Image (cartoon, rainbow, N blue to C red):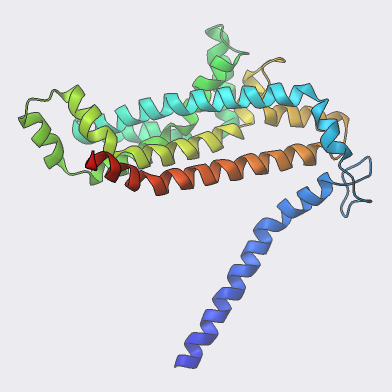
Length: 271
């Protein structure tokens, strides 16, 4: 029996290694391609060179597109966090006839094709005379990630102890103060997770941005597509490597924040 368990454990180890290789192999190919010496993106690369990293510095459109992506993703994430948290609280703490239908409506962007949402946003924002800029993209992307916030924050709200809010209310705290002093501090981790998922999801958004934005407001994914239509050099691989580094930094930043949250709470509690 013990031999079977050991054999099964090794099977799991091998399967895990193969899955990791399958997931990381495309990233490794991109990294190696970015150091290619040729004038086209080929694998294996013809020689080793860092010239394309220097070439990226001269492509100013990528820097501006990256800033546009940061602005759009940050704005959409913040808007979704505020609206999603309030909506989750309204549905959970103040149920009313039809609240289940309202929640299903809020979750619908998860199942609606993104290209359909993009066309709908284009028509709506054109009528509102705001299409073409980052503000319209922020509004559209906020709706797209709204379901993530409601799901994550709503689950956290359902697990909070109502006794804490009741105790604060008994001591004379008004609902707004109860929210900021009792409810919100207990949602820090959930808000962080929902914000991280929303930010990453909106940063790679293509369909909505492609239909809404005009030249001058393009985000990084759109700028990459435009560049690939004209050139096939390793610059695209270099930009991809930069995005991998950015994603890793974001991941480790979130990990550090999650680990330090309990320690920070203890320190604040001692004070």
